[in-house]
Length: 135
Image (cartoon, rainbow, N blue to C red; front, side, top):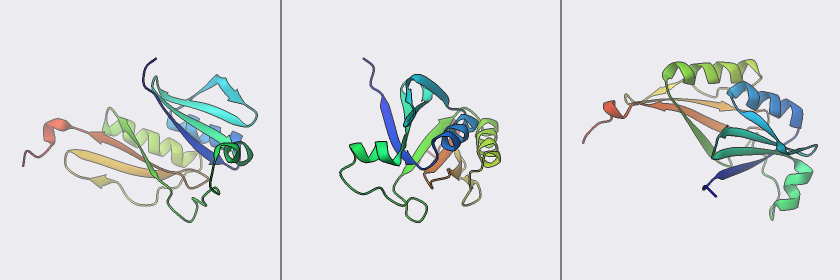
């Protein structure tokens, strides 16, 4: 089996969150989805599990963080172009996401940040390695 990553996120409104992640470009895998959790696919090896608070709590050993007021992690997604970066964030904003600050341009990398309804923070970036500083 290939190495994969599953990011498990507690969400308050499963359908609303599923719609948001679909707008970002994720697809739903119904094989690993039910009424309490939705498996959202970014690529063949990267998945986000959107879990109701009740289902998430069944796996957790600590209280669920309030990610609307505190940062619990930064999740990053690479894309193939600046246009794709801008399209993904624009779609996320139309779906109700929040962009907490303007685009960051590092010369070789452009990065935008978007938060979902529960405050989970995603950094979407495009990197052009040919422009990466050599020193």
